[in-house]
Image 1: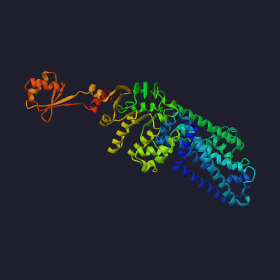
Image 2: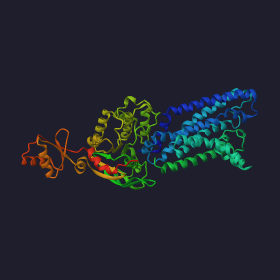
Image 3: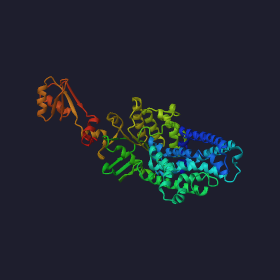
Length: 255
Length: 298
């Protein structure tokens, strides 16, 4: 009999039985920690951080890129099934369909969040080790929250990717859409919006809200941002809207 | 039991399936036939709820497929070979589908065995041949020990051993009282496997009948007759309303009279016959006759 627990276990099996999942997460882990160390080394030699915010920012600077990689992993969870035709087998097994998308989201978060917490913690510690005296420590105000925020941000972008994947269905289109949302929208909005408006709007853009989740003392983006928790709420909102759109189409369209 | 009632699917202004009604009964193998583009695959996709009918209904075991609490126990379907992520092993693929219904891993190993894939269970599917992909697809169809098995072109890409395996498998499933619906373009294979036929063309039902009835109804049987006095024989048979065509071997092929009637006429006419062979039309001939009008070139 189909229960949500069963569907969740199925999606978990799908996620962990692909070598590409582990290759992607492994590469993200190695590069994120390695680059954090390299940045810590470079910054300590040229321009030591003036405060905790800058020290934390240095550790998570490469995250802007890995957000896109983890986002693409989320996209592929959906589009990989359409590309291979597996989606037909999946939706035949679970003809009510919506539990599939919910289970994919949950399985993705359950796998990537702990991994990203470990990665971000390691990246922080390695970076601070190179920064030496100028570095922040885990006990500093806001640091634990920043590490959790840095771990949650790519996970949420992955869920955004999952929703886009359910909407667009093919890998190339969905990855392009995700890249446009994460990179092009923030770059275009600033010149497009009339003066003053960008201050009010930019903090609600997914990329900026995501970056604000792991900023300490407002550092990390050149824009006015909301507090980390409020930024997280904004990003969660975007994720829910996108997943709801994907769910609506998944339920309605012929597979 | 599959029951379609006025099942209709339109894509824009193109009608793929047009008020199709038929019943697939348990305990026999039902062949689902029709030219390319006749709507077979669309119909099968509607049966398992992948496509939504524009109008009409189709039920499995008395209910629309998606209303079953354990649909894989109702219908096992093979709709396309290698509908599998290439990076997953055969075992993981089956396990993930089994887990949706809480089906035990033991059953996964069992269907891998039935499909002859036990040795490659741990291999990634990307390296599978088309035939192995078909076997994996059939393993998926059997996973839930379903009351209805529905296979779209299952023998595509299979070697002769595989073809015989599928034939025996389908007959065995029907003998166990299951409903078996199978589509194929191989008429000779269908003639060996199917008891009942549902034939469609351009989305409409052309025939819902048995193999024997179809051949009797549609195809014209012929009789091969050999005599030394060919000209006399021809005149005699033509005079009795038959159509007579000479063959390369010197015998004549007769349409329009039964072998018994020809024998009686020859006896009355004092013509010695050396061969009198009734030839039953093949399923392929009957099928071609039936679908000639419905073949669509696009």
